[in-house]
Image (cartoon, rainbow, N blue to C red):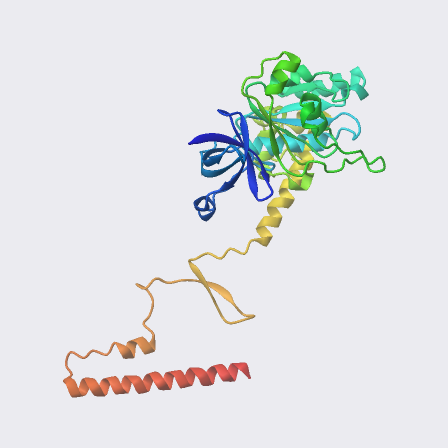
Length: 384
């Protein structure tokens, strides 16, 4: 029995790296795993059986427990997320950047995201200093890189050393280009910017995990057991939303001021006397604009879920017929009246002899037939 790491889902199977033999196998999952509804994702640790080195195939017999899981992008056992943003081409969008930060706070609360600003060769030093001044005071790790010139790549490798990292960001920011600069042997597909829209084309279609071992010799940098996942870009509509009052927990500079707010569950948007609104000069204008927009999105999401919910409590039932139905409490057997039919069926026979009992049975049967005929007539009348 050998252990492997799932690199990606591929054509009905899985590509799995096995460290002991330093080999990659094309694997299928044992039927029991599928029957139990157990998912296997990029980054999962799995047990391999029926290994055939000549054909480079194996069977996944079990999946080990995960220590973390991202649902979007779907990657397991992640240690940190590197949010890749372009300074230019496409132009940096503060709202989208902050939405990614909030999303990954929700997905991976134990890790602080890293913000990697790519294409720094296109920006002035003043622009880069301004970006750093927004996020570094908040505790986020900020690094500047350029896939084109190689600037900052060594620092990026140090950040990823000994960890499983995920590169995430919208299409066109250069995630695959950065990986090509780090791992040129993979020759990943890269897209061309749409000049008219400033939006990148999707070039990565599935999450895939890469080992950084080759960097150690080429850049003379120790990387240890390091992995990085390239992921498809996704838009702002696919990001997770916190509950409206909880958005503030993802903005540390606003949360610090909110502790002294006199209003309970204050959203810190329009309330007069709110301590946050009284100290807006202490907050980056871009960050407060992002906060306001994300609260509005969270409110819309909350209302949509509330209005679309069709859940009916099990303690109530619908009565009144189609068009006039209303919900009334269900009564337990202890408090419900016995129906007429059941009452007739429960006629006491303790004082009856056999002949009387037979007569009672016949009478009850006649009553049941009469009730059934009456019910059928009533239903026909309603139908008419």
